[in-house]
Amino acid sequence: MDRAELTTEQVLKRDIPWETYMTTKLISGTGLQLLRRYDNRAESVRAQLLDDDGLAYVQVFVSILRDIFKEETVEYVLALIDEMLTANPKRARLFHDKSLATEDTYEPFLRLLWKGNWFIQEKSCRILALIVSARPRTQDGGVANGEASKIRGPTINDVLKELVDWLCTQLKKPSHPSCGIPTAINCLATLLKEPVVRSSFVRADGVKLLIPLITPASTQQSNQLLYETCLCVWLLSYYEPAIEYLATSRALPRLVDVVKSSTKEKVVRVVVLTFRNLLSKGTFGAQMVDLGLPQIAQSLKAQAWSDVDLLETLNHLEDGLKDNIKKLSSFDKYKQEVLLGHLDWSPMHKDPLFWRDNISCFEENDFQVLRVLITIMDSSTDPRALAVACFDLSQFIQNHPAGRVIVNDLKAKEQVMKLMNHDSAEVTKNALLCIQRLFLGAKYASFLQA
Image (cartoon, rainbow, N blue to C red; front, side, top):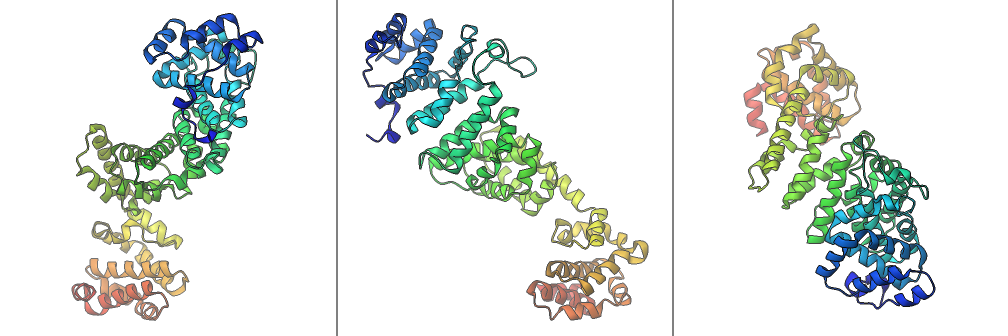
């Protein structure tokens, strides 16, 4: 059988020659007795044995992985440990008992990550992630007890770095075509709760490996992968260096696409939590508004979710987006954009409330902002800036009581007329709108535009 397709159930049906290992002194007599009592027993019997002698079994399992290299036996013991931890993840604490303080319980799993077949790699990764996450901590989050007093093997930071390196390798070039990436993401979703892992992951340039995986899903398997990927992004949204990378990537548009199309509540919840974390960071708020998130949030609120916390989070997000719209629509922000000549379709340009509430501000400094808009129309080579300048001039004409007179006095007509023959359809469309309002009046121009 192809070892890449092995299952835990198949591996656990094997008969391992424990007596031979005892004869060659690879396991002790006590170890043999423990294994005989445990082998091929019902789940309830094994659970009771672990409740009674869990530490002894952990010691036996770790010693076998340390001293025995036969592939079938290694697979079998990894399957036993995986089964044990899957049934009760709290058993991972046994690997940190004080009696194991001088034993490097990480080394066998780290070694097998790189040297084994896929079954061995996957089990080693899963087990190692659970063991690392279960290590004892002090109140300040540091390691404690036996963890701090280990005298053999690498430090916990070394272990985490090597584990992160392996996970990034799987995301780049998976060992298994269909399971490599899901396994890596599953482990990352567990490990990224730790600041030291976030740091290692960012330093390994791992964030960019997550972005392509943020895509709408259709099958149960792809939905789980999407959920765990978004969970990783959410955990990274608490770490500033990761946020800096997310800001310059396609992460936000992809997350918006996911939340628009997903019907899975857990996916929507973790994406909305990510939005809430990022909202106040850098330019994320402005990007979210540009991507239509306020309308999407309203639509999501109208749906019947069973999670009360999701609705509360949506309310927080919606309030935050409203605050961002207000900030984006301030005249100072608009004036800065115009004076810098960086005109784009930011939300304020097409917001009727902005023009109604701020129209008198255009009179400041002898209509300075209008004069700069006209200069942009005369000198800029950027079609987007030209189109926005024409549109804004038409908005001023429409909203200011003396708009047509003022714009005519500033001699803007000639610049606008030239732009009606521009190569860009976006420029000519907005130049035409401006001329209509300048010549025909706001109401008639609006009628023609419709």
